[in-house]
Length: 290
Image (cartoon, rainbow, N blue to C red; front, side):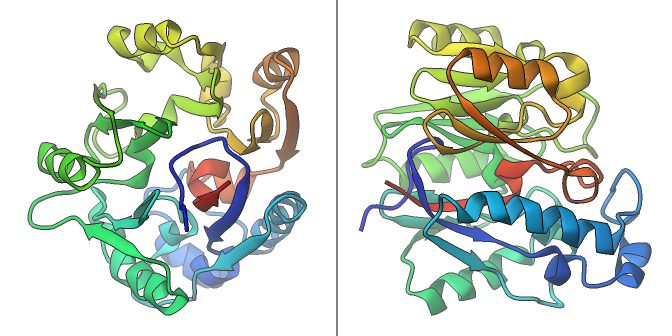
């Protein structure tokens, strides 16, 4: 079985978490949204409606959608199923979030993968912390890892060791401070690969070497303007090459994708995306891309 070493190959198997299980209830949201640093309190019923539409798009293209179970050991952020693990061609690497509140998610996820019979190829240990959002397959032999507040040097060392036989180029991308330690800036905050030669980016946050490297590799860049970056316009999920899902309202980004020959699906993400600031890539953990 070949698991995932791409962000854009046709998505065949994905892991998600339903907001009814992550958010639990309006009361739970009222109690917890400030703790988890959400922009404002999500509306539980609206979140379920938004999610149903999001999943309906996925169901048209993805053969297997697995749902993480409800767990009282984890919080609201468990909705963003992408971060606690990262898939490689041979199976999952269990991570340890740079956000302390999210660290319990790894153990719950690990148990879930074991129950499903999905192989685990490694796990971060000791002082290493990393989020899945900082680990990007540019192609199936190139791994880029963001070094920022959520992923430290020790995690990068361990990831490099664990992926040594799977990767030809392991690229460390230094992330900027941007708006601070409490806000979440991942490598995937400013790049989404939507085909082997097409990426959606917010260049203002990119190190020059990384931007140049993408261009040298023949990758066309769709530039997301600042207001759409803030609305998660840079967070684009590829269901297949140039077949994308983006949060509604990112008109400039959408038009550039259409001009590049992409098919674009939109979903309303006020409650499930903007308030917790996690877009469609964050909501999904790709297990198998064909």
